[in-house]
Picture 1: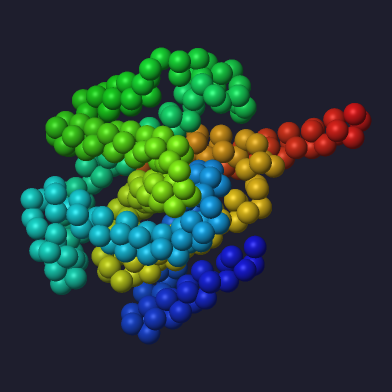
Picture 2: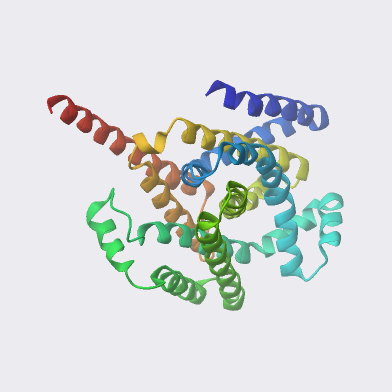
Length: 334
């Protein structure tokens, strides 16, 4: 375990040292706060990613921690917001990039203006992630048993998760403060993107011959999943500071530790031992998706989102440990 976290710790110390030299104590504290916030909000992300990562070869697991962190830091935390603002504001990405570097206040204003599209897209994508899990007819282990068994029965209806997500999106669009067209368009893109990537990763990817092809598709799916998880955190980061270097360092450090934690969960076979942890993570994702949709109607503080995620993970951990003790007692008596 210590070996996995050595590189993230070393990189974090170097990056925070550079931020301190560049911006002083204030910049150091902001970057540290953003890193803690990112880690806190991403425990459910680590658990879900660990399930997908367990299907990949050791080579691709290592690439998830090396190549993937570059995509995570510079792609999701830097490039993706620029592309979203570019699309929403109908301005070229180059212009937005220059604006982000030279006039961060104006860039923040444009990013805030695109918040509705970002929340609708991320909420729809994450809602699909959770619904796909709970509507899975092959799922035979249940945490909230009465409810989850009922959801599995609904899963026998073809594409029921898409219908449910579209219904939620339609209802939210009526109450959102922003134009319904923006909410519906962004949400539908999120649903379509999930359907396509999930289908490719777990359809063609699993059936394809050769670990490279399978690993590539699962790698792409994992990074798209990471992007959806991080959208709300990126917006929250700009609420604390408009400095791109501080945001990239803070969120990047958090993302690096979360990916190391994901790999640790896989190698320690944590999900096999703690049987309800995956359930808790998907309930947390469901809560996060609803929180993102609720953010289109009312202000939802980041602390509430963190409590939702950590709460479900903590409850699932407690239930899993209890179930593990019961199993050990039964095995001993048997």
